[in-house]
Length: 196
Image (cartoon, rainbow, N blue to C red):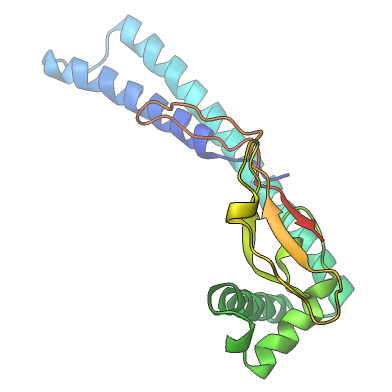
């Protein structure tokens, strides 16, 4: 699990700003040193800042080691270099982008082969969007709807076989009002599904 360090960096920055404010207040009064109360307050803030920065460093090391482990596992299982894996991901992303924006006919032979090789991936995190024999659009799931026939399309397949539709159901998420300059955290990712 990767640690999100944004809040930690913000906390360290606030502690530095509070320390700066103490020094600025002393200089504004024309003093070249802090009084005893300010010294204690400054030292407490500095100690807390150092603890936060030490925790940031530890969390960063864990994030890096987790990435290295994942990278090593991928390299070990595929017997490919990290550069080759990254290059293949970029080629796949380009092919999928072409497919989703321009359709299957816009794919060249290499892109078509890339998408064909990736068809074994199926998951609720978007694996359903890998083309097999499917529509070129994602249908948005709705909690309530009506007037189905007047808004429907009839699609006839040549063999009468199954036709896969992708959709995402985001109806369980709620909307919230976030104040300005507040951190936003995403609790739930969009879940992809497939209907035949």
